[in-house]
Amino acid sequence: MKTRFACALSLALCLAASTAVAQPMITNVAPVPLPTIGGATLTISGTNFGSTAGSVLIGTSSCLTLSWNNTAITCTSPMGSGRDRPTVVVASGMASVPFLVSFAPPSIASIDPPNAPTVGGQLLTIRGSNFSTTGVVQIGSSVCALGPTGLWSHSEIRCTLPAGHGRAAPVAITVDGQTGNGTYAYAPPIVATVSPTTGPAAGGTLLTLMGTNFGIAPSVTIGGSPCVVQTSSHGSITCRTPMGSGSQPIVVTALDQSATAPSPFVYMGSDAGADAASDAASDATVDAASDSASDASASDVTVSDVVASDVVASDVAASDVAASDVTVSDVTVSDVAASDAAASDVAASDAATSADASGDAGGGPVAGGGCGCVVPGSDAGHTQSSGRILVAMIALGAALARRARRG
Image (cartoon, rainbow, N blue to C red; front, top):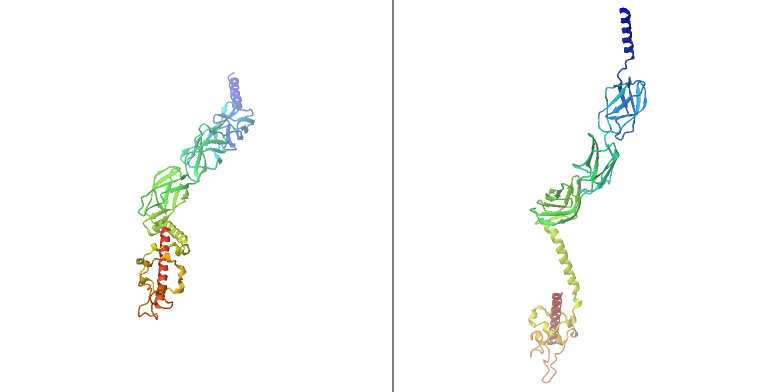
């Protein structure tokens, strides 16, 4: 009896050993990484999966079974995010040792609009993949907030652009410990006005620049030297000018983008500065002088413009005009009317009415009751002609002088 019992017990143990199920083991999962949106068809390779379908878990979510055999399982991946998520096969009540898989990190395909003002506030649309359903977007050193009009999906994010600067501000989308990177271009600075545009060579002038897209920490140079910034915003800058000379360009830089002001800064007290500042004044003076000259030409004044009272004998000494300066043919008697010059305008010595008793005109003056005329060709006649010429010249000169003063 004892022998039979021992044999029966041994047989039972042998049968139990032969029907025991081995622990399933995963050797590979493909393809990886998994998309955060899910839906990928996975092939799980291994051993001891059995012939009866069990279950597959990725993280805490089920991978929907498509096919099952002892060495291979196919299933549809769930949504998820992050790296090193445990994958477990449960077969005949036994679980495999976890096999770690990761979801793909965020990937940026485009950002619309492609650039915006440095002041921010623009609604951005970021398109790509593997954004999952939540995360953080950072542009530069600030967060691109979702706000009331925001959106977050596996392939699209809408957020409000923060203030910033630069043609390639870094963009980082972080989802469950994984980050996708890109860049964003802020608009370049524009300088509209500068005030004042001149200052002393010693520097220290407080300069005000107005414009747009100056960014969050702009710098200013004048002729390559720093203009120390006192205050700044996206639309205005004040700074103290450095020492310098001449006319120097003003440049505003917002991170890696620069703009030159429409007007240079002119340092006064240097030759170059003085020349630059006086150019406009000298141009205006020359123009004014030429206008006056053209307004009063010699042809604008005739001898008839001058009355006898305009010129007195004391204005011109007899010695000022020699008889040889003007010939009789230069001025005819008709050039000057008798009313133009009173007899007092010309000294008696300038034009004698008669010749000396021993004068050069033979025969002298006509005896009593004569006409008192001077014989042409005599010295007295020559003197009288010279006197008329002198009167005409005096009158004409005075008229031109008055005309010029009026202009």
